[in-house]
Image: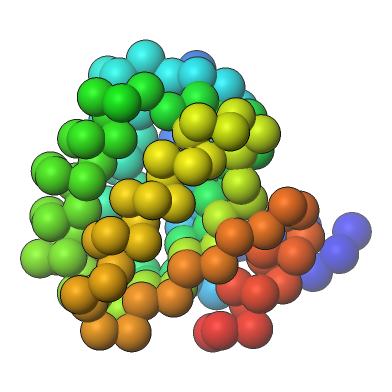
Length: 143
């Protein structure tokens, strides 16, 4: 077993196509998307992630969105509702390592929205990757 496998995972939540893991020893949240999600699950997962991040002052986020399909109403909710709440709770400083979605539409819309969200905030750091390993390596280099 590698040391990463032994890393303490304080919190893990699962929905049908989304899982959240809070890595206590490195203080980052990992969200894995394994397919399309119903809006109720998508929003519940993001709200739970924000709750965990607020409790633990998390600024490092890892997203594996390779299999995610994003619905327009959920992207709008994330942009107009979740994101402003996250800024209020956590501030704007973040490191986001994102494994890009195989779904072209979801990937394009997400990047377009994130670029718009982060244009007016101080020190956001968002990086997109094709592989999980590269994304995690980049994220951990920013601890």
